[in-house]
Length: 482
Ligand code: SAH
Image (cartoon, rainbow, N blue to C red; front, side):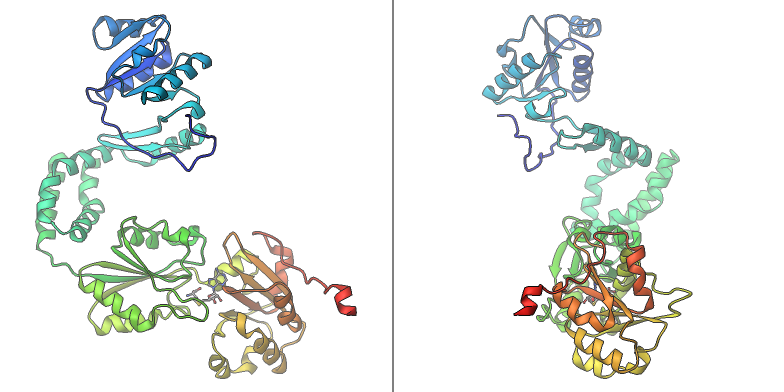
């Protein structure tokens, strides 16, 4: 049966059609285009139609294609692996699809995604390298648009790169039987001089550079390393380009729970992923456990990515991890990320500093009682500064009471941003004196960032992402009476 209107998604494949019979039904311009593309792929093309347009007739006369004359006959499908219905007549096309279905021949009906058993994607070709784009048949114009965008971006020398890699495949495999090391070689190769030389059509120079790199990389030991990456607050668009590249080169990814699925989806598919996340209350893998995992994989020569929510150096224990790596002689790098305070403020429309309202910003954690006991409340309660409080949801009571007790006005605005930058973002706002009450009414949950300070009032005016700030819902009057 034809695929239902909404299905779980098409399964992409690249078919080897060499010497295989493919039937094209129809004798017009579209049939000609399809037949030519199929011939290019090495298929044995048969075209069936009442009348063939001149170019097709010529191809048949030259013996490049077989031809059937007359109205569609299911027997034409005999021996075919695929068929394309391009008659321009919807009813005939549907009967071709049905006849194909009955014989288990895959039929594509031109411009009729719902009746097609397979779709022909929009294509970008660079030598043996092909990129196929499909919108599942539902939005072919989108696929075409994307194809044009990508065409402009993908240099034509990529074809030469693909040819070189195909030619040198066996040598590369022999030089690097170990997959992780082979992958590192490819990364060096592709970000090095060889593609640039091919772009300049310096084929000989490219080959020489390739040989040199193969020799050089073969001599190097497999030194693993760790790269700490800030994943940002959740929206994958907020990951840095450097972070994205490192994720694509990772062999192993140790990630927090705060690193969103969308960000993880950008990572190399075959990288090993290990969640070492901390859930509220439970601490998942301990910090010592994380250290041990980093060490084990780095010593095995892997490129380890330690992916953390926000920025690794803001309440992320990145410092401890580097100290550990340094002590064990493991190389490392750090890629900053957009920390929750910056992201939440931006996505709530709250400038953290403002010439009229706040001259300084403090990042504070309210993770545990003792971390709050050590703080200098008087300095935190000063006016005209913005507090960005991390991990504060369980401590709102203490925060509200102590800030007011140490001189912050009860009218100081606050904004509590839950799931900042994510689709589920919610902002609760109000005066500091009602922080606990309003968070309670709206059932605020972690992860949430609390902003306290004059600037928080601007959320009402400047918010732009997601729903407007939640107002206090006055308690049910009946409940009050009771
Ligand atoms: N290294 C991280 C912070 C880790 S501590 C960073 O730089 O952002 C975890 C706390 O960060 C959470 O309790 C919450 O207060 C805050 N947080 C992280 N992501 C958040 C998000 N998307 N929305 C709101 N708060 C977030």
